[in-house]
Amino acid sequence: MKKVLERIPDPRGRQGRDYRLWSILGLILVSMLCGRRGMKAAFHLGRSLTREQKRQLGFMRDPTPCHATLTETLRVLDALAVADILGAVVMADNGDDL
Image 1 (cartoon, rainbow, N blue to C red):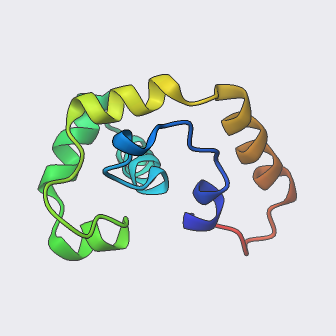
Image 2: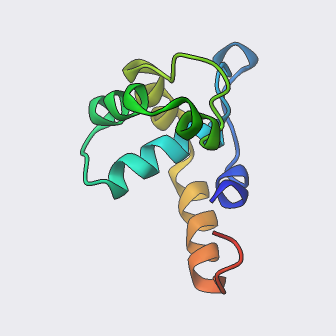
């Protein structure tokens, strides 16, 4: 998953990069796969993770991103670029990329 999410271009400025983009997107993706809806649910999931779970998602320090960070990050992403990358992976997936 990390390899795929790292391909997504990060449009944030230097000041907006407290967390790696792939980590934020990974948290949102895990939240969605757990059946949670919305960024508030992803925020709460992030705060409930164990230290090891946070580390596996690339969060090396506490706390995980707040609701505003999750929301703002999604707002600035180029949706077409994300769709192109994820679509290409799905189409070419042989199990190695995820």
